[in-house]
Structures are given as C-alpha cells and as structure tokens.
Image (tube, rainbow over all chains, first blue to last red; front, side, top):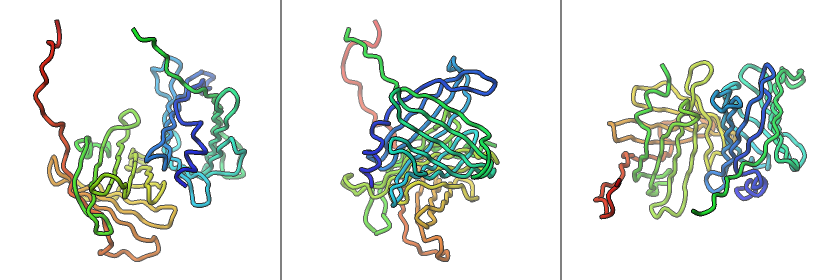
Length: 153
Length: 161
C-alpha cells in the first residue's frame, strides 16, 4: 500500500500555484504543496490562498492523504473556513481524485483534483446535504511552480 | 485563551529511550513546531529500534483551534493511518489526545511535562468496542529536550572585514 500511494500521485508531488476567484469578484492566488511523509506512507497537502499582492491571507488548509485497505484515498484535513473533517475518495477518472465528506455544520464538502494538459485543476464545493444544491464553488487552475535556475557566478 | 498557549514552551526537539508496546527498547524523537502561519502546532513523532533502522511508529499531527474554541487536530500514523484527534481535559502541563481510527481503534497519547526540559510520553490503543482497561500495552518514553552541541569555532577568517 505504501508504494501504491506514491506511485499514483508521484506526478503531483511538488509546488503548484494559480489564480483563484475570490468573493466579490476579486482575484487571488492559491499555492498548493504536496509532500510525501514517512517515505511516502502518506502525503501532506497544504494550501494557502492570498490576495494578488501575496500580503493578505484569505485562507489556508492542510491535510494528510493515505490509502485505505480497499485502495481508496482517505484525507483528514483542516481548513480555516471548513474546520476539521475526514474525506473519502469517490470513484472518478484515474487521472483525478475526488474527495467527499461531511462538515461539522451538516454541509458536504467535495474536493476534486484533476490533472490536465496545463497542470492541475482544483475544484472545491460545498452542498447542503448529499442531494443539496451547490452553495460555494471554487475552481483553480494550478501550474507546477519551478525554481528559477540561477547560473553559477 | 488560545488553547495552544500551554504548549508553546514545548517547541523544539525532544528525544529519549523508552519501551515499545511489545516491550522492546525504542528510541523516540519528537518535534513540536509552529505550523499554518503560527496558528497551529505540528507534532512529528518517530519511534525507532535502537539502531535507527526500523521505524516502529511514525506520527505527524497538526493541532489547531476549532471554530468552537477547542484544540483539535488531524493526524497520520504509520500504523493507524489518518484520523481526527482532540484534546481531552487534563491537568496543567499535560497534553492528552485521543482519536478514533477508521480501523476501529481508539488511540490515546499523553505528554506529561515534568519540568522545562523533560516530558514523559505514553501511547496506547484499544478496539473501540472494548471496555476501558487500565493495563493496556503501551509505548512510553521519557523525553529530554535536545540542545545543539556546543563546540569551539574552527579557526578561520574574521566574520566581517
């Protein structure tokens, strides 16, 4: 199981960033870090959202992904706007990861990571119950962040 | 009061030799650090064999204030996988954490502060369905704060011209 998690998400490990639409039509920036811990036994996934200047923190969250015995991903996470929760993988495309779980206030949180040609799209939404209508949705197109190569002096 | 406040003095690296649940000797290393821009406390825990080659148990946890004010957290354990944890009321100088795992166990972790540089760590778990018992096999280790080794600076050029 340990190798399976790394094998599946190896391409996602690293730093990602992209524009995010904030309430009231403002633009912000999301930075996402996916880091293996304990030799890939789990992945630590941290996200930070700021305004475009990078000086105003809009929100942040952190979670651990690990594999269940049946091969599904389980995510325990904390987000400033959603609190603590446990999300479980729902069936989706092999190049995507859909996580779904209940929030403390009865809403349902769905987070979808899907790889595409331009990078990774991250969609999160909350609904009022499993059959409810979507109340909040954020879509972010993330690109891998790479370090500038500085030539030796 | 920020529920993290009583534990901010624990930030640093701690280590010690203790006993695993099997009774085998184990070396424990624990690091407390700030996380999430200073709004959360990260706990990194490793228990290895005395030769540092086998990781008996590794845990990474993030504790933060919940919207209702309590200290709660997320944890990943190499044994129990991911689960949510919460602080249970206890005496001053004690961090008592518990959580229900998806595997059907309840995990108990306690750090007891003996003085500024000494903690006592204990951890155990039992099936959720089992009645509480006082004699659960447990891992325990006295932990001492690790300080950087002091050594004389090697000779070299002056720091500034």
